[in-house]
Amino acid sequence: MFSQPAFSAEQTLPSKGINLSKYVNFETSYNEAMLAKRLGFGLVRLPIPNEFFNQSNERVREILSLAKTLNDNGLFLIVDFHPTEEFKKEISSSYTSRNQFLEGWGQFSKLAKSISSKTYFEILNEPGKIPRWWELQREAISRIRKFDKKRVVIASPEGASSISLLLSKRPYRDNNVIYNFHYYSPMEFTHQGANFGSRKFKNFHGVPYPVPGYYMSRYPSWGAEATDNQVRLVKQWSERFNVKIICDEFGVYKGGGVSPADRVKYIKDVRESFDKFAIPWTMWQLVGGFGFKNTNEVDSEILYALGFRGE
Image (cartoon, rainbow, N blue to C red; front, top):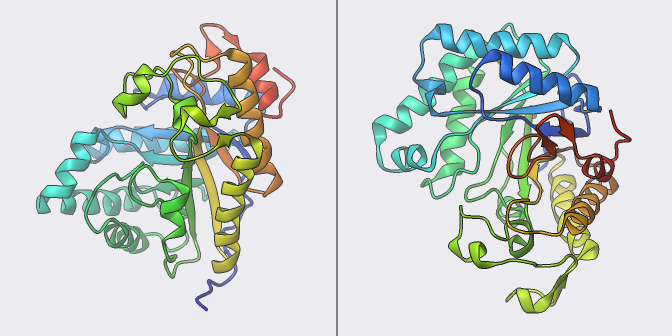
């Protein structure tokens, strides 16, 4: 049986993390990250937009300066390349775009070589339908390894990075890779009323949690036990191959009429399942449609669901 050597990252990744807003400037991301730290999070995931690979080295150094500052303040950081769907389509159809993507990671790794090992690189958020993605991601990792042999890299399966797609993969022969999945099951609940993604969820309103079967075509019902069953499978996959895993997105969209109490219960059940199986996580997100910071206030019920007692 294929088996990786024991994971060789120098530090233990904090178990509780949060996603920041997509990067715009140093100050905004720094302030969000410092709030996350005060709330008790030890890990932040920073989505980087399309321009990440098209900016001058000075712009990249600005992001690396932020990384150094956050690491110096005791935070672990995932630099998450988080482009638009249009960008992913370009990678899918254009050899030039694919090569720019690979060269971008190589150049970034070269500039970032001196940054603390508490900064991790996530190759691409939810790769979607990019052809031969697993092979392309391997090549991106090899470009990073030309300049940085030990940097921890976050690798994701194609599509929306679901558990089922990760289970179909064989890990790379690189023991500084953590494998990522996203968890929004069932989306009839987590994405109800959302005007993005699948159009069918836009018309879902008032879906309760636990979710009765008549809202779903695939399952008789969905609650804590169903989540445990899914999370157990991905944990077994990681143990089979002796690799590390993380869920770096989960949450519930709050803008579609979901019951606040049901949203809290879902987040609590999912978080407890990850903790039960010793899987680190970063919730999506601190600020925004899935977030729990509203203007100058933090939703203490969500914070409690995540295992914290408040600021």
